[in-house]
Image 1 (cartoon, rainbow, N blue to C red):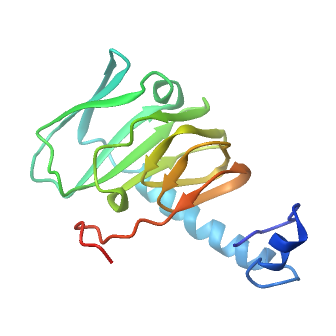
Image 2 (spheres, rainbow, N blue to C red):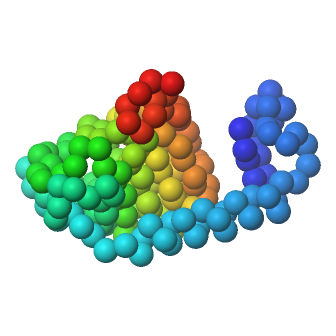
Length: 183
């Protein structure tokens, strides 16, 4: 477990902290800068997917079925407006997905997981806000370098980089390669 700054919790968890006692501030500052650069790079791409939100669902139409990476933007408010992912038209089923969450509203991830390989999905939360994950299994990574993760329930099947964590229930690394081959 990597914890930067001050860790508040039971001593058995503090003892399991990577690096043991002592300050890891310089290591975390370097890592944070690196992940902020990743987030900025991912956020700089233009969307190649058209999204629509209706009937409590999110619907996607890809510009090309041959793209290897899809970029789609949504706001935090849009993330709270749906509870499932509808049809994905004209999309490459083996592509990677970058979901750039823009704006200032908090993000809420509930309901069904994104219908793609977990290792190939990244929720890139741009800016400072709270990312709420509850009552769901998130299939994908959450890159939220300036945000707070609030996950009192649910499971994240992927990696998480967050500025602050107020609650974290269960985070699993996917046990398969991006092509679906089990490890």
